[in-house]
Image 1 (cartoon, helix red, strand yellow):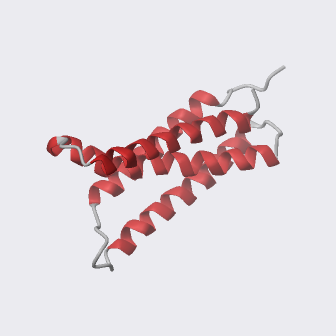
Image 2: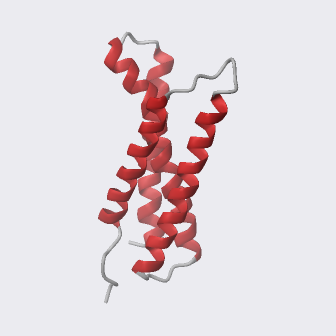
Length: 130
């Protein structure tokens, strides 16, 4: 399976999680305090993973050569973009009266980045195919 397809499937799974959490939010279910907290932070977690792998999927499709060091560098660039964008969004929320800044959202973003690194390691072959 091509690398762009692998990364694309991971991004679809993360986007599905994001969409599912928004659906649960819209249902107005009584989830209790832990459930409400989880529904509150999961979008940041899922978005961190999704942004990384959407960008990585595009990049892998454009440059199909397989060099592990190049893939790692691309992953780090995509991770930096995702982490910066989501952190900036949280900080922008501090300046708004309607939006809510939440430190747990920043921690969920960090957890998403760590999870994305683990997923990257799992779905990326460590040796070139022969």
